[in-house]
Image (cartoon, rainbow, N blue to C red):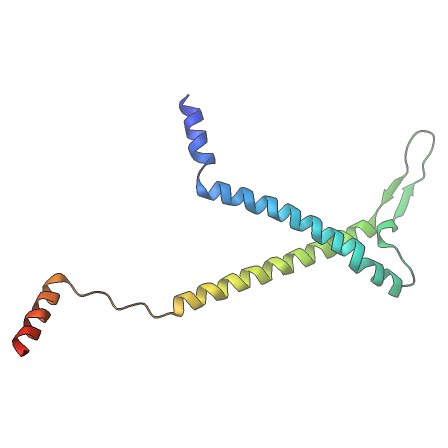
Length: 132
């Protein structure tokens, strides 16, 4: 039973929950970027290169025979994946850069001067009363 309590404490810690949310959002973002690359970016690039569809580019190493499928190197899919990676890496770079600039602005704000100790406050009040 102690192990279950430890697991619950671990799983409900803020860092684990934040990480899980980040992973879920990252997976969804990855799907969006993959669709963006394969459906928006690659068709115009393929058209500029003479109507090439990158997703179908491959080299056949061994032809299909009997019930065995052909062995192919799908380098077109690899090109799509590399472009996916570059876009995701750039988006993450921009997000981190924005967060760092926000942190830097917060750090640059001047902090309020520390409140004087109670004895200094009391002496200041006595001085002010004596001046009156």
